[in-house]
Amino acid sequence: MRYPGIRVGAFRRTYPELKESLLAELADLAYASALGAVWNGTEYELRFPNGSLIMFRYAETIKDATRRQGPVPAPGLRREDADPSGRDRVPRVEAPVGPG
Image 1 (cartoon, rainbow, N blue to C red):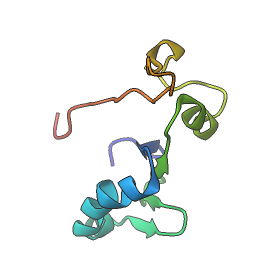
Image 2: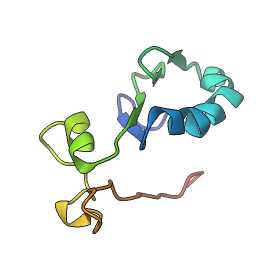
Image 3: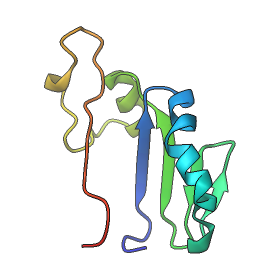
């Protein structure tokens, strides 16, 4: 609730991966209803009372990710991060979670 109106994308390579991981954990937490969040299972979006939004999406390739985020690339997503196999997988981004 610290950043009103923020829009966050939570990505996995496929929707089945989303359902088995992030969405399963979210369901265990009652879709953040204790925080006043509202889950839209059709759009795979979690909206908070302060206007913040988490969008759960797939992104197998950099092309998929840029299609989702528009013409302005997200920080840390560079063409040089393409998978050497030629599949252009989106690089894994990790950040600490929790207070502080």
